[in-house]
Image (cartoon, rainbow, N blue to C red; front, side):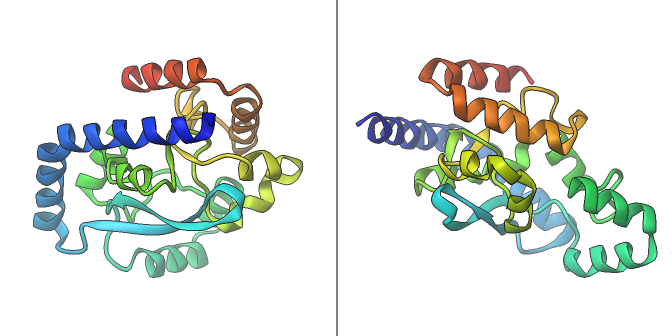
Length: 195
């Protein structure tokens, strides 16, 4: 019963937030289209509860054909390849557009994930959604991640985000799963607004 109530609350809140954010989302979509054309959204497959794959939606922040640009960069730059293998991200990623940098810095690129919440694939609060290749890095804590629905925000996002190591992210996801309550979710949502 608790999970069903939480799902309804998440859907209602997501619908309200989508309504409130729709003018901003329309403006962001127009800016992306004006700078780099279509597509406006980027859907990347992520691992959901019980290992179900779903398309996690974001505003596109990278140049078109970013996968090819990444492969070229990793082949030519050993330091970038080492960082990518270690952290699954790059500092000063050359694929990110100027509007994309702003969207990522402000987390506005994640607003389309409200649709994922509406579809029940995500919640407002939970572990960050990961790609299949990252699941092996969770090791003994893989079952923690798979036991809950990933969220738009979570303990990792309000506890240092890009200033944490990958191992710290995993531990923050583990701590969230083990301690999650309605009150913890409310506290994380409040901290998210501040962050």
